[in-house]
Image (cartoon, rainbow, N blue to C red):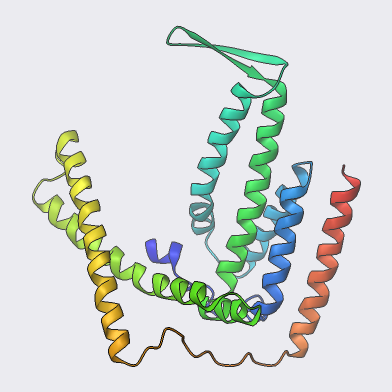
Amino acid sequence: MIRELFSDSFALKENYLTGIDARIKLPFIIAAMCVCVSCLKGALPLTIAAAVFCFLGSIKIPLRVMLARVSAPLGIAIMVVFLQVFFSGKSPIIKIQLFGHTLVGYKEGLELGLLILCRVIGSVSLIIFLSMTTSLDKLLAAARYFKVPATAVEITMLAYRYIFMLFEDVSIVRQAQKMRLGYSSPLKSLRSMGELAGAAVIKAYDQSLAIQEAMMLRGYKERMIYSSAPPYTRKDFVAAAIFSAVLSALLLIAHYSV
């Protein structure tokens, strides 16, 4: 499940979405996110999210994977809704007694919190669409094409490459702790989790030093060589036209929904 969540295994499959050039998808996703974040009503972001899930479902991506990817930012957004309800607004709609204190919920805070929640759902769905239909190497190549600093691209590439090794090391340590009854009680579980976190940090640090030495021995000069971007195809121009039409429609909807 971890590899399904973080790897680009779905993006490596051949279908009508993964075949579109990343240089076409990346500007569209960024522009659509700007529209999603700036809209003043929640219907548009929810419509975008529904369309994204339908497109991803059409290329046979499991719904559980999509929901798992959106769960973390969704949890943070729900916390923001809670804070907005009880700390923003002027029109009380609910009162809760908690530990001798009265929490008052406001209508304006609820409306603003729900709008933020819708924006988060729409924006995260667009990021999920990009990550599940574009492999990392293509995405980084498109980033270099748009003049993203080489240092940022290289750090991203190395972090993605070695994060799965770190997951495996953490899993081995955790299994060893479980075999030694390290999670048999709440106190032991807390201690084992602290030891696991410390071991992960030390392993990551040692691995970074080993990688640096290996790269230097192989002639790394703090600048990687990237291949030139392939020419655009007719399918890419068709996709660009469709994306432009969709983006124009989103802009019109956002403008007239104010």
